[in-house]
Image (cartoon, rainbow, N blue to C red; front, side, top):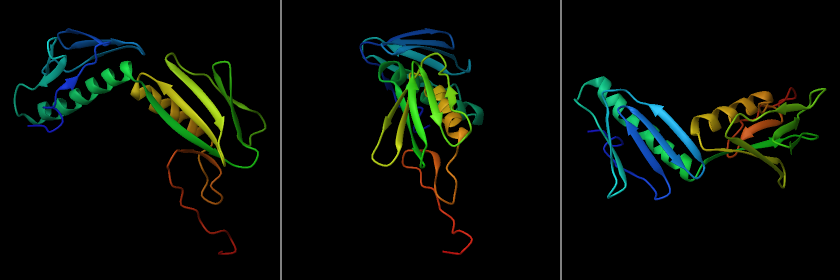
Length: 183
């Protein structure tokens, strides 16, 4: 049995779950998400215990793969609409700046022009000056979208390997190379 797939998902009181066959809608204070899962997976919600359970029809390889994935995606939906997700990026470099103008994130990262990033629906940005870098927070209720937007922002100016200037995830380690002098 799948160690992840067999675990029940606790649904908070302020979250509503609507299951129609293999299509699941989850609505909470942060937003609403819906997803269509493989038809073979049996998803059930017990209103008394407020638990979601995922069961698979057989021990076939494909069903085993879907079992854990279905449970993980359902759990991310419940957590997203109740608490939300956040990715934190750091901007290092002399003269590099990040600020929020309206809903947009404006980055000055060494180009001849500032780069403006418009958030998709359901995503918000925060930017603040930290002790040695700018801190950029990408927040939203859809885990996949938050991760994709953060990756797109990081792609604008990834941290370079000589001085470490650029965008990186919080806690990401950049291996610095020696310069030409071989220092």
